[in-house]
Image 1 (cartoon, rainbow, N blue to C red):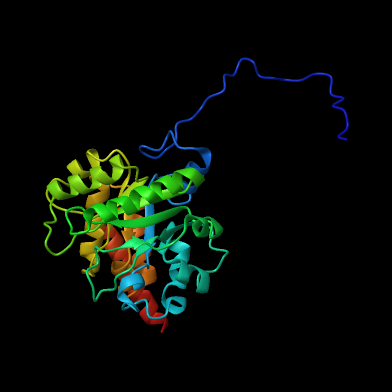
Image 2: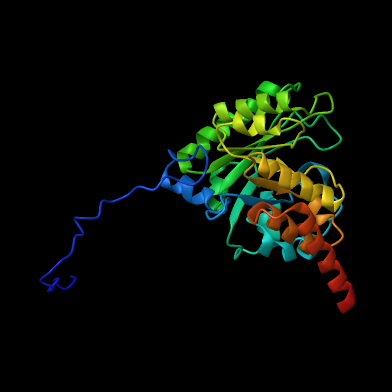
Length: 296
């Protein structure tokens, strides 16, 4: 038994009222403690933003350029990522269990790049996400696609399971070749994901009027990096998205396919977390490359 408290005077601070601080993330204040804790491992509580490193391309593309050897090319980037978006196969086989930040698991899949990509199914059990200590699971949602209803049901089933265990669900708005990438479509797709329970949404940055996409979505939006573009263009895209209401980036090829991936992810962090202008972040990127070349 614990020893009796022999201190005669206690201080209950009756003059100080207990305060309940609102959760820092948009649309997330009413979640349970466990869900909020997991979201805090995805989004930096200080800045409210995230730099997600997307390396899940192999689930339908196979060994994507830059991801041929994840143990060689990606592990050096982990220290600069707020969270990883990847498959459970790569997580178990390559990622060190000492990685301290959030894990977002790709939970949908099925067809390869050789087939119709919108015909996806839920490709993992929520209990495996729990075993892997995932902060969130991600699912493609093909609004306007041939398998629109199926993909939406994939997401809502994951939302039900995620709410049961306090795991967030990332709704990824997928855009097929036949769909137009404009603000009107993105508003529709993001709002549907949010209305049906997605904890946060990943979509593409579009011009003009991207601020109407973020404003009309009641949960956080992060932007997809998309195909490889020049580094300064990628930094401009990230900066503009943040300035127009995005809560971060989920960037893959524009980081790991850059000339210097370690410098690029640091430059992206400058834009997302420090609100640096793209030109200054790009200057840091170029100087890092020059410094590396001198050492070699």
